[in-house]
Image (cartoon, rainbow, N blue to C red; front, side, top):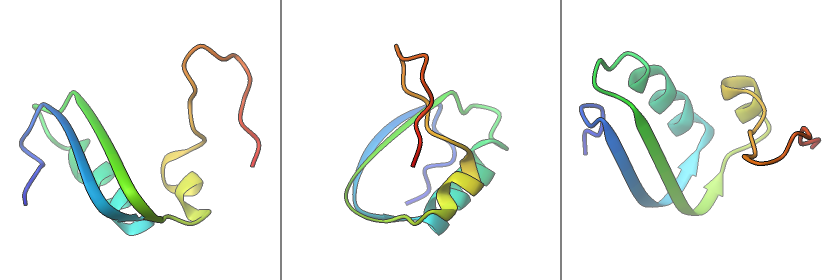
Length: 68
């Protein structure tokens, strides 16, 4: 499924890996129509390289950083 042409997208997938996140980040940021993307997943194979790929998580309403 090609999701790169949507402006606002919310999806649920079975599994998500760090490679999936890197692909989405790289390609969605190139899209002229992209505005918002929310992805939920049942199983994660994301490892610590995720922070290198996209940076530390942001928690709305909290001024404290998250240490992992």
